[in-house]
Structure formats: structure tokens, C-alpha cells
Length: 202
Image 1 (cartoon, rainbow, N blue to C red):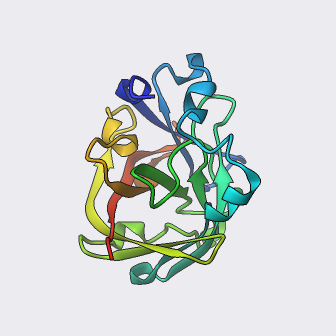
Image 2 (cartoon, one colour; image 1 turned 60 degrees about the vertical axis):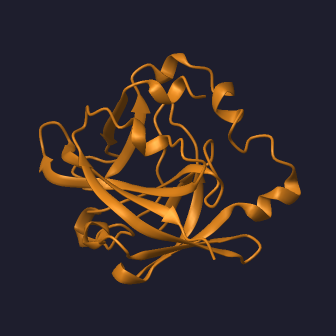
């Protein structure tokens, strides 16, 4: 798994329908499609017993931007990229990675700029500042609090190893959406916005 995170990260966009401005973004490693999914499940949740499902994230709340959404469980697309939630309102937790609150970097993605001006969960993600708080609730009703540490914009082909990996033995949650300007020819945005957060220790 450590070797996997050393691979260069490619950040792209999938558009579901023609003329749709739904930003179905994804992060994938340069050679991810050549890597067995089994390597993910070693640290992921594929083999968790049923009772452990209650520990999985179910709701995301970000008071600063008035976001309050259900969390879908998402995996990988056929292209080897992180999938995205089905609609604009929900967030998507990458279920082959870390559970929010565990040591490591958990990933939650979400749409912004949905078609016809329909509100999307991460439309205002760019407004977050250092010190803002984010709350993730699991199936047991337990809430874990995270605090924003840093906000970064990435070029689509940037090396974004730090989004998925950490080596400080602490719990982090990283939120991902799209930013920059829309390229109608490439059908993608020019930037990828990542909000890095740290778990608040009570």
C-alpha cells in the first residue's frame, strides 16, 4: 500500500451527460489500472465484519458553508479512479481507504457546479478557512470532529501524493472537489480543490 501511494496522482473529470456541468471528479494514480484492487483492501474495509459497518461514515456536516449531507460509499470506476456520489446533494467516502477518524488520510469527495444551477454539496467548499470545523457521523451516531489545516489547488496532472498518504500516525480527513475555470473542450476544470483537515482530539 505504501508503494501505491508513491505513484504520481492524476486528477480528472468524468461528465455524465452532454452539456452537463456536473463535476464528476476523480483521483487516480498513473498506473492504478495495473494494480490489483486487493492491494487496497489490505488497508480498506472490504473484509470488515457486518457489525463493523456501524463504524462507517453516514453523514457530513460543515457549518461554515451550511453543508449537511448523507455520505455514500464509493469505490473505483472501471478506469481505476475514485468514483463519485450519484447526485449533487450527497458526499462520497472512498471505501477502499481509511475510515474517517482512523489513523491515516480518509477521503470524501463531492460535486460542485451541478447543471442548471442545482445546489451541490461542495459548491462553497472553497470558502473554508484554516480553523473551520467539519463533522462526520457514523452508523452508531458517534460524531468525529476535524479542523481545517490547509487548502490547496492542484493542476490535473500534479503529483498529489499527500492527498492520500500521511506518515504522522494521526487521523486526517481530506475533502475533494473541482475548482478553477471550466474548459468546454476538455470537459474538465482547470484545478482540483483539496481541503486538508486533522482530527480534533477531545
